[in-house]
Amino acid sequence: MATLTLSAFGLRPTRLLTGAAPTFQMNVYWISQTYATAIGFGDPVIRQSTGYIAPYTAGTSHVLGVFAGLQPYFDTTLQQVIGGKNWYSGHEVAGGPIACWVYDDPRQIFVAQVDTSNANNPITIANAGGNIDMVLPAPNSTTGISSAYLDASTWNVTTSTLPFRVLGPATNFYLGFDPTTNTPTSQPTNNYAEVVMNTSEYQTSTGI
Image 1: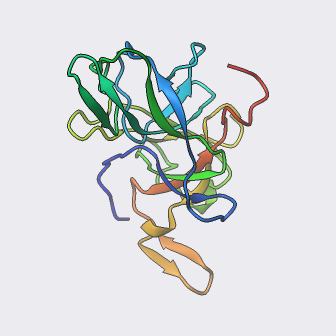
Image 2: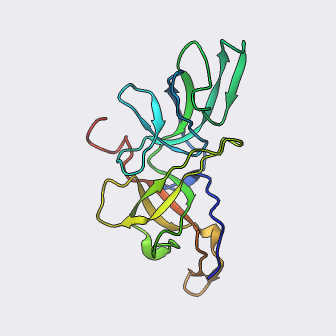
Image 3: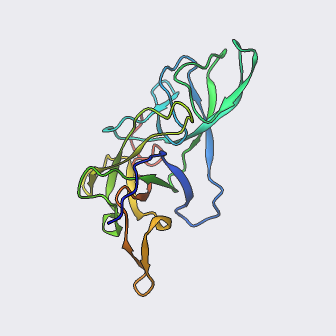
């Protein structure tokens, strides 16, 4: 079986589960101006009890959405307008909280790369319907892009608190496709899977 290099990029939106036009829904949230942990473009994030967002932590449950960048704001130290696709680990200095974008629609489908941690790699159509967690290394310090990837060792059909539901392998990364059965014939290790939020903050019954 072919191998892909693990070169994770976090979660990227592809389309809506409902099949509607791909006008990916984002909403505005806030980061505390004193927050000292980097958040990469494509990182899954949570809403803290303070109301501000923070990166999701592997092994926990609820997830708000996927970080999609900062809104421009006036930096009171640099005396200029700043913006970007990632949060620079508390280096941003401003007079108040910073507005940011988050893909928070529970119907949003995302693509992410899968690691080679166990027999559930690659993710195949047999894994559809299971739940899965992510590994979240620090974002790339040069590009600001997430380094998060799906943790194949956590895939199962019984742990309801895992943050993502697997829809199957990403169809644009098949190495072969059987037109008679409409199924993939081969998939590489470190492949890519499609997921939706399983524990979306907007679908769980308990508060934060």
